[in-house]
Image 1 (spheres, rainbow, N blue to C red):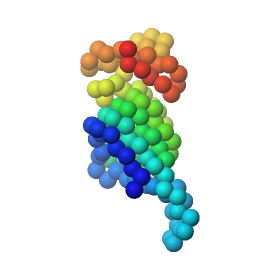
Image 2: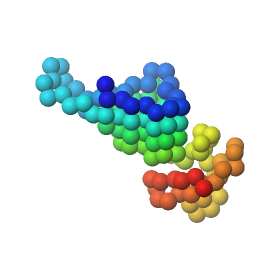
Image 3: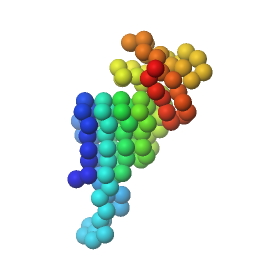
Image 4: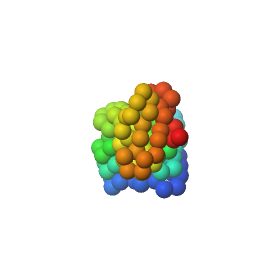
Length: 123
């Protein structure tokens, strides 16, 4: 309950979604928190997604990552807790930095611009 998954999402084996931030046996004050996985995201094997999270469009979650906060569009996150380590393009390939706030996809040649540390947009 509470999980919404948009089109073209890859969910790797043993990915776990949780929907209660404070699970307890016989919890009468259970609060369902909604999770949204946006179009084109890719969730690596054995990743764990905590409740109330938004996984951004075209983002990539590394295998085994524990996602504790929202993931921006085009972000590649990994670790426990998951942190952004790179930007990825629509092809899912890490982008090459070609200038201040400018990125290029080595696979497609598509260009991207970093607006701030949490926002990347296709040009």
